[in-house]
Length: 510
Ligand code: SF4
Image (cartoon, rainbow, N blue to C red; front, top):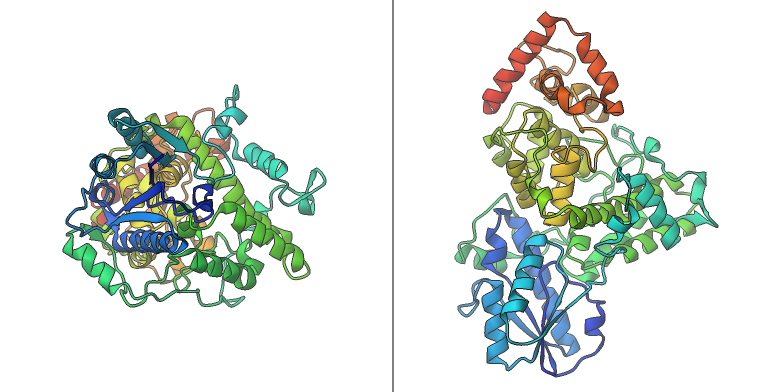
């Protein structure tokens, strides 16, 4: 039966069972489409990264003998829209059946279901064979429960997949080494230079420009750093194991002006495009640990496994449990616009300047920069989560809605009212100073609470607690902060609020 098989830009799984057999009955289609470049404004490195990875994937399929129809962004016959594309190919090639892999975005899931209803041939959806969990596994795990605790899900996953387990007990005697994952990096141990693939993407960049795709951010066209093939993803994984794993856990929350990647793996783009599977990543890291356990402490490895087996699968499960309503949640009723400096990095606040400029330069920032610098500021200044979401979804090379929205709207902006985070992730300058060196070179003083020299995070923090306190009544994890708020004098509170108001009204002046 002549069958059309669709492969989306984030479904680049070379090990998918679809590809086991090569025959003339299956035609694969892949397309760089305006519908995908335009639903949000993306960083240029993100568009280049996706298109180059898609092209490499298509070439790998064709080298194996598969029939692939590939539409480049500038091709005159590219319909630029999924339903037109599928309908045209079905009619042109006398297709008898349409098959697709379940997409990881609600938007595409809905669109594909509509397409299947509209076409004249039968259709079938297949799993992507990428994640450890199915779409509904988290929903079933928490059935009847009020709280969706990540820790409970994570332990279930460790046991179920027998990862870092000794019989039925966790390796190292503890499930979670989070407490050991919070060191500040102060110049040692030395950090190996990142593995960059330095690909020349000049031609592709020209094609994207000629197609007038609207992007933002910076790119070095002769030295594109990200992996865009399975081979490169695999090299990045090996580099992580041999060069970075020994200190990954210790410094995973550290912040530093000169070190943008620290000991982070930079594998998120490789995994979110499905070029490499979470199982391969975890198996490789855990095997490496067992072979080198005299040199690597369990806390380094557990911290990494928790991010992928725990958080990554948990967020995906939350996404499918809560969508589509999740995308509209704004429980804290935040409505301020996103400041202009999010698009330029031009602000006197050194932590934000560094984290945003780095995001614009590299399409990357690590999770604490995203959560405790940029997200913290957006939440404290009560920015509309729709605008925060659009920025995060566009700027980061690894951002696909299922992982972006749960981390941003949920974890970072508390817009879901505490579904994924048990408290809002907000802090004053104290935490930022504790975890990095941003404050040393800042125009503001992290120790000063009010007045012109005072760090904006200090007044914003108390102002936020005061304005939103009704939302946190009964939240045990907020009770200490709320009781400290109660103890502030009217005069101190009014000075803090006055300064916070000025910052919120004129964010670009600070
Ligand atoms: Fe950021 Fe405040 Fe520290 Fe400056 S003093 S780097 S604004 S936390």
